[in-house]
Image (cartoon, rainbow, N blue to C red):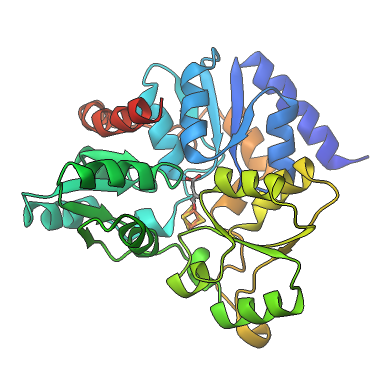
Length: 322
Ligand code: CIZ
Ligand code: SF4
């Protein structure tokens, strides 16, 4: 018997029984993204995940992604039950930006407008004036800059530098990084592109500036997926989590997608183009989240006071995007 197929059938039945829908991020493993699609859920970036969960009629959301995505879902839809395959799936950006320290940083610059990336805890969002995802960060910072705001940006320093460079905005930077994107190597990428001159290089701006500099297209997950469809190249070198290949290959089955190098000469890296926390969203964990009578390892709770505060900058982003 195909154990995985059997597990998938059990999950499909459980989702129906519990009035639940599976929402998966582009960085989860291909079989999880396929399952979300087969069961009428969605595969998306963090902004679209939040919107989908909000709009979908299901009473329970199973969020296959990382902790901040579950917290955002709970913040926006407090009346729904939000489950995660594991609450231990975190993010180095979230971990590297503790709310108390970030609050101190903001308090030291009270004249600044605080813009935080979606990859943060509800407590950090609660201290912010704006939340942004990588798909809308440029437009929002451009808008704030045109109104003369000085900006505090957190937590990803590479994304922040990229936006500051593109917009010319005055930005004070928190020094966080994503352990996956931080590993892409410019020299090796340059060489790989030279060996494949017909290939286009797609880069997520959480990557180092030297890697972004080699890109033919820079953007969020959804923007890179769009670029892979619209550009004429038959090959793409992709500098973001390799989970994204599932959607790129599905949409362009005749194109070839290869990973951007994460270390020179086969050197080891901590997380070779795949987020270790996204990888925790396996079939068994999803099934457990739906059957456990004890939900302490799965159910997302956000303090209602905190949620009320975090909702303001989140809704500002959603309204701006609408
Ligand atoms: O790197 C991440 O975690 C991303 C790109 C999240 C998202 O979809 O905005
Ligand atoms: Fe965080 Fe990076 Fe993983 Fe995204 S890929 S969840 S930014 S550690």
